[in-house]
Amino acid sequence: MQTQPKLIDSFGRTVNYLRLSVTDRCDFRCVYCMSEEMTFMPRAQILTLEEIYQVAKAFVELGVTKLRVTGGEPLIRRNILELMNKLGNLQGLDELVMTTNGSHLDKMAQDLKKADVKRLNISLDTLNPERFKRLTRTGDLQQVLRGVAAAKAQGFERIKLNAVILKNRNHDEVVDLVRYAVEHGFDISFIEEMPLGQVSDHSRAEAYYPSYQILEDLAQHFSLLSTTDKTGGPSNYFRVDGGATRVGFISPHSENFCSQCNRVRLTAEGRLLLCLGNEHSVDLKKVLRSNPGNLELLKQTIVEAMKIKPEKHEFNLQEKPVIFRHMSVTGG
Image (cartoon, rainbow, N blue to C red; front, side):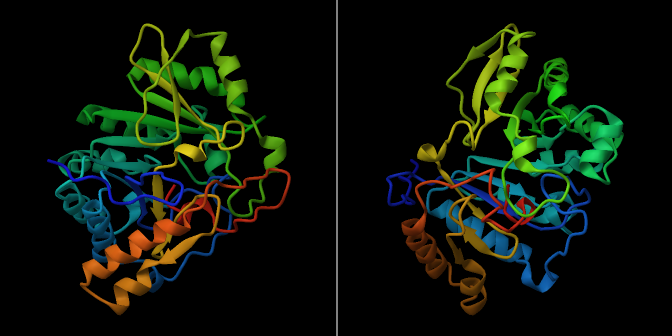
């Protein structure tokens, strides 16, 4: 019999979902996520895989049932499969999932399935090779599509595509992306760009393309049925009539979802981040390295941290970002 969740914030929200950033590094330089010239953290500042595992173990013992491993790009972290296998064996964990850019899935999808990863989220913003190169600065679309095919062949419970939509960059591809998802039996979520870190490629206000506009674009080509489906995250889902594909919308600007927030994030450097759009955090690395092996102290620190989880984010596209960390260090 499962124990009752023990992580409840001061607004009465139960936290049962932890996102783990295992690295701030990535083999892409996506225009909405990173600057073209990034300075990464020294490796000594990044949590070790054992430290990440200890945090995950503490959270699961406190009632968290879903772990999502993210980056940067998690599959470039050395020995990542060793960590995934250990996480997959945690007692009380219902779902181990991963977000990836897909560039290494052609070689690693089979091992991820063996590690009991249930679902994959794969970033795919365009099906146009030239656009893909422009948006990622370094990426190869065909390599990613091979990875997507390899993941499909492994039979994960669900594969979901994530597409960040930017006006006049890829907003005209939303119909093609849904058709691709339907063809392969995938889900897809469209994401409004989040103002984290300074980017030099574009004005975020100018590139903003709201979820309701995407929905209007899709409605001209598909019959979309509203659903109450939830996968633990902030997506609101519609189902494509006549198929299994779900189309989700993550809308931090046009439809604030903070009232139902059930998640926290561990950054690559060991900060427990209580909100994506605020800097409220607790330094778990300090606890881990000052008190090695003291799981009870770690759990106590996590429980106390729930008191400072803020009610909501304060994203504003018209202003320079008040959050200077890039998405790549945040845990998605």
